[in-house]
Length: 399
Image 1 (cartoon, rainbow, N blue to C red):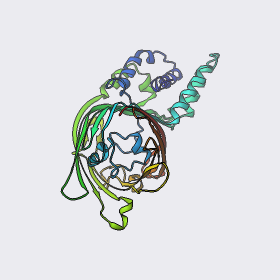
Image 2: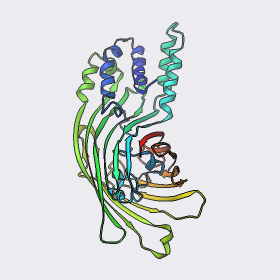
Image 3: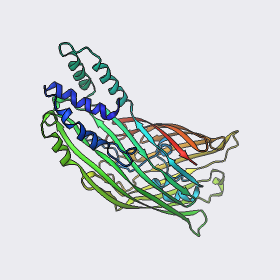
Image 4: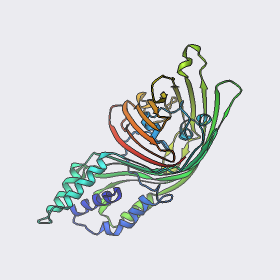
């Protein structure tokens, strides 16, 4: 069962509980359109977010960086550098991703869909099926549900990269009807071009990078009660809350190879970036603030059979505390490691993201790459308050 079907079924459950069965039929087209319409339909999506969620607003994070705990400011060598530190483009070779769909979600989405499917199989005698569906909704109150789909075709060579991003997300919490508000939702989809360039400066080991992005976001935000959901004007309520805005931002970054003789075998690198200068401000659609990130990485050369390279990385994100919802230190700390085997055709990754363990693996078959990432995001005000565990898979066709 798809995520959008799950959401529609949840709405239908609440309708049945109030003996008003026509609203889903009347509003189904509008709901599906609002959540699914997006760039190329592959990147379309929708997002629902609990109003008190304190996860940080970022534009895009990929399979590699998330598996490394989000520590990527001083890594480079990958097109993901345009979202972390464009100076890292200086260290890469040719990389072409013709098609690279990314799918991400947590287990609650799957479990909820399964529970609803089981409830629908209950014989419809004496309202037994209706009661079973209401029980599912009650059982899942307070649960977080998350999913994301994105696509970022791109072309990158040494010093330059350009791509087109399109993505949509789902980040939801169900509420109890007894509390009044049953759904607190804000979400949408976004798309636009992203580019970056880097340059080596006359100082040995110093690279500077600049990036830019123009993003259009379609978004809506609403707090809905049972009364709202069964009202005849629900369609108008949702339509009135939809906003579409676009904005442009610049990124700046530096990478510097530390020339410390005693550490030469570790190849230490320090990185610094200022992302989304002037911020990405989408009005009612939310804001991705300007933030400064500091990173450090090591690339030791170890005489281990089949080991192509090893990368260790550490980041402090948003050192100026521009994410305004909290001042947590640990929510801004990221650590990670990547080991490449057999000329980097097999990659293993580990990390810590905001205090939570991350892991991932990738197989590179020259023209096809397939990978998996496990990580958790803090959605509370401090690390350890409320963990949202997620799974990500990505398939990339290219070179």
